[in-house]
Image 1 (cartoon, rainbow, N blue to C red):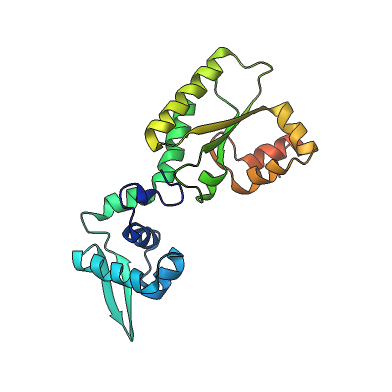
Image 2: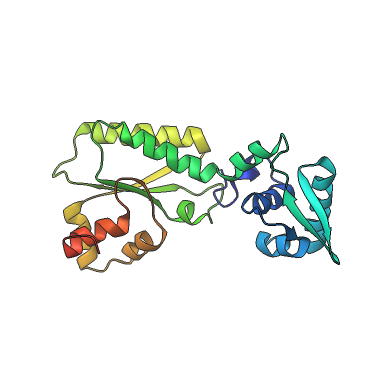
Length: 210
């Protein structure tokens, strides 16, 4: 699945991009603004798609002064599937969190980071998952449950799972050494299980929430 535009899994044309822009807001937008937010295609192409979707009733087109403003018709029978398709990344995060919640040996914290978290990946991008635990030695159950999650994620998305597992002691050493990847975790990570990464960092570095 293209994590930058999940709807392209079923709608790879410019239509998917336009619908994603409209699904993210309830405010009417001009064709020019839709083009700006889409950051792809030509303005003429975007307007052509908007008018064609308006003909189906899925998009509402209203004349306001000298311009036409477009919005997603959320009463349309196809609107719910569109909204669900544009929210596939969040569904993925929810599924990962639910799967980890059922682990026999759960981590202290789990978060998605990298291109999947930033929504700038592509079809070949891995799903990067940070796992923080408090175990001196990882039991065999750990690798089994991670392997099962990898299979689940591939079934859900077609993408491969890449895990980065650290103990809290290892993580403390990463903080002390100012490892560059820590900045990625602080800026991009999306927690799917346990506390937010920033809160976890504060607990380890400062001994409590900041």
